[in-house]
Image (cartoon, rainbow, N blue to C red; front, side, top):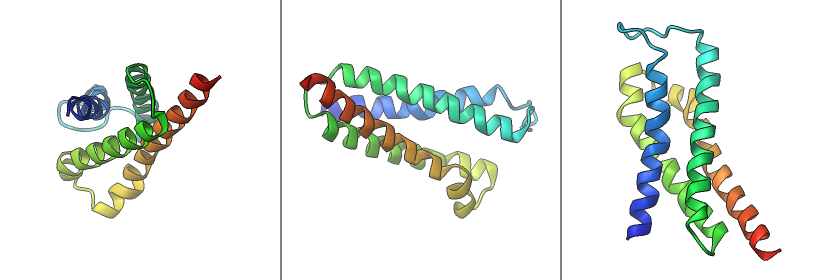
Length: 128
């Protein structure tokens, strides 16, 4: 149970940190203050750095079953990020679900890709 609390807490951070960073790029009246393509690129980078850092932290705390841990954490974080977006970002932006999937949701597939990759690498490093 403690493991899933930790995974969930880190998953929430993987969503919350980029959200907080994104707020710095909006004016008080809710308008984006930089080019939208630059904003999207920055958010991909921020999300990648944040996610990779949290995954490195998590993988340092486990001793075995790296690939299966990568699958579990990747799927849980994917669900957390999409659900939180559907609750907050989609209604605020007035996006349709289809637009959300095209513009944001598809990018979240990087989460399980990164987590499974780290699990695979950790398995091979620990065996050498």
